Image (cartoon, rainbow, N blue to C red; front, side):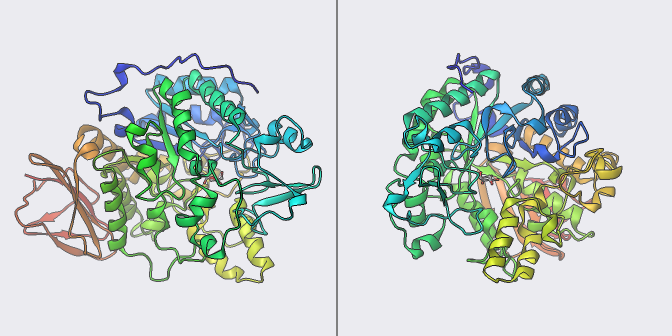
Length: 582
Ligand code: GLC
């Protein structure tokens, strides 16, 4: 489809910015991420859809969140659940129609909810018309929309293809006797951003959605759009580094990345009052500012991978270190990332999304006796950091990993092809399946749990992926009626953040940094100061307030009924408490 040039319908207006230049609506927002496939099915085909989302907008509104981020909803053959787009201007058949989209957007805006879509522009689907044209002949007008390596030059230098059984990011196409590049599966050929025509297509497409009234884009693997297209040979040592170092230089964060982002800002983002957030694959504390420093006029925010990567064994695919992770290291990472944006730019905070397992199972404790407390503790952490929280649907209920036993239950191309890869190398499949119970992406993709009726009220048909059997207990219906549920705790803390801007903008200071069980920090200064105390362990812990610091005995929020504050504070397992400093 062709996109008309932008008419700049939603040009920036004064009303959405707050008083000072440094305050922005997207800094104060809580973003709620919905994986549309698994949220609510309206027509019984087992797949969530836009009408399903529309039917649940009052629920989303009731959470108090401001922005909805939807994973890709565009036409796609679904090799990677929508991250392989065959028409950027069409709606995925299973999800509905453009008319449904228009109704959905209107219904969101009527409720004061903003909508952020997913921009998947490093690659398209191999079923996109551009690719069909591109592969048809070496002289086709679309040939330069993708990266081709003619076979007369021999085999191209190795590049990793994340979702391929043979691990290669090049695929031979006999039609024109050439290889094409795909950093993910062969169904996801990489687009050639060096071609100005391709960039214009992407920018026109973004303007098309913004003109419809969309409020922002989350940008999928955006550092990958620029790479060294002379495709030099990469040594094994550099390949092993994966993100950062040489890997970045050769395969991602290439020489023109920031030129492209500045061009995107000029041609698209600056023309609308919208937010942008990069999936910061490979971005480090020292490169983050290149994306989000306001003066550079690129993007608003990014999310890094340093936190969510902690605790996995190096060189093993998502396999936990049996020793677990160290809270001291966790604190160090999140404190460092706070300091990155202390003066300039703005951070994000998340523990779960569609590429991660459930935050409860990964960072909390999903044993029945600790589920609620640890889930609320993680929510408290996310809602009290100086960064925009990206909160994943279902975490407000304390949903947990499904922990499949068999590969046949998995639907994710990543798990399935990694299994095949290990199988082809004669590797340890049992070990792999065990590790997947913790790290697999499908753990976070099971259907949302609405009520205790069959399939958790998600669908009247057969769900595309199994529903977690704990839905009879863990569901919206059950939690609505319980004042102390995870759900109602989430609502309370969202309001607390809204009513106390110090939790958004206030200075962050880590306390007792070497404590292996307690993560404590203050937000704000002087008369407006709050302390957050989180016992990340399953043991009771006595924790002393720093000398000279006194607090109101009545907490602003507490995930237990009581708290004993004298000189020291007795914390229950996974207790989270927010107190006002006097
Ligand atoms: C991003 C997405 C992930 C997808 C990949 C390829 O990491 O979040 O879900 O598989 O890019 O598009």
